[in-house]
Image (cartoon, rainbow, N blue to C red; front, top):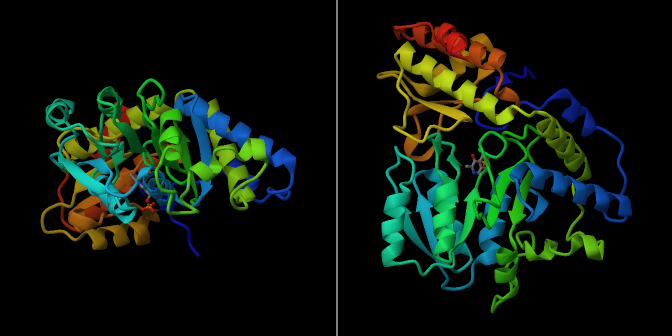
Length: 377
Ligand SMILES: *Cc1c(COP(=O)(O)O)cnc(C)c1O
């Protein structure tokens, strides 16, 4: 199989030390006491980069597992849950809330702009009777970054717990879980963390654990039950066998991140230079504000076909970028510049390949995107 350069908004490329780590010989993770220490230390290192003293757990399943587990563990029948949405993942939380018997109420934002904290504040002045609220940090299909710091602070001041999907932001954007009062934040191995897909990371506040303990009815799930993970270390008992090889690789990827002091700044520089290249080149960014530092979402030029563009880029330049789905299907092209892909060489080559491809289909650029990118970087 010919492996393309994957410049998609996840999964991202995995560095060699992480790949090799995954191949190492392993112990029995259920029975070997040393693995409990390794797992705990790994969660503490994750806590360090999430800036939290909250408990962190690594679960065996892709990011979606973390989203479902948060909703499964907090939701009881008829609970009122505020679903703050300005994109596909934001809206999707309502399905999990309903699945576990809750009652989702939407606060819908403009899908081209980040959620307005002022408007949300006015909404909450009228009704703030919600057990918890959900919001997406970076809604990846549109590349929308929400100000979760302000928003979670506001929600918490109204006594509402917060669940944040930071799957495509964690590691690439500022994230201060304690300062921002986030009760549950969810990440995944395959985005900015640049480990193979298969793990989700969840940080859980004391308030969130208390809410789970004070439920009137038991959590209607096993795999999605976060409470089952509360005392694993004291009990030396995991609810199921942890995927040890994946966790070894994740630990290596986390060590890479902790050593990389400029990671957030580099994402910011890469993203601004990418947006400048795209706009000066004559293309349009899909959203109007709230530009994420991990993915740039570009409108498909008028009269062109996204699939043809993606295939041509892959066939001729061996670069894979992404289209989108849902209401954005066929309308946008997405370049992921997150984690190991937030690198000057990879992004400049991707812009070169995209420019050549669009020129092939008749688009006339106003400026050379690679040149602009390199000048701005
Ligand atoms: C990638 C991603 C997830 C996980 O979804 P998959 O499509 O299964 O990879 C969840 N939330 C957001 C915002 C994501 O970008």
